[in-house]
Length: 157
Image (cartoon, rainbow, N blue to C red; front, top):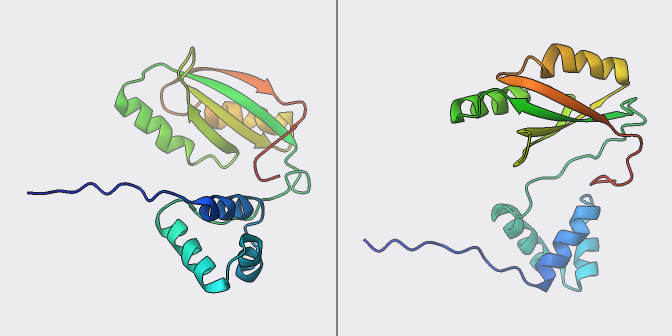
C-alpha cells in the first residue's frame, strides 16, 4: 500500500491578509474583502471557501457586549483534580461544557490542572456558580479564585 499523507496547504500573503481582515470584521462583504485584498470577487470567494473547508476558519459568530448583558464580573478559577487519569479528565471535560457561565476552560501544565474563565453578573452570582456547579464537577479536589478588576484586552473586542 502506498498511503500518502496530505500536508496542509501553505498559506500565501493573500490568505494571511484575508484571515487578519476577517478576524477583525467577520461580517465584511465579499466585494469589500476582495477590494481590500486587491483581487476580484470570484477568486476571493474561492479562497474564502477553501480557508473554511481546510479548517483555517472555524466559524463566524456575534461578539456580545457583556456590560450591556449585565455580565460584568469575571473570575479566573484554578481547579485541582483529585484524580488525573484519562477517565477523570474526560469526565471533567465533558461536564464543564454544561456550565454556560464558564467561557473558557484550559488544561494547564503546572501546580493545578485547569484554568477556567467564568463570567457572571456579580460576586454573589459567581459564588453560587462556584458552590453549586464548579465545585460539584467530577473529581474536583479544590479551587482558587482570582477576580478580574478590569479587562484590558479580550479577543473580539
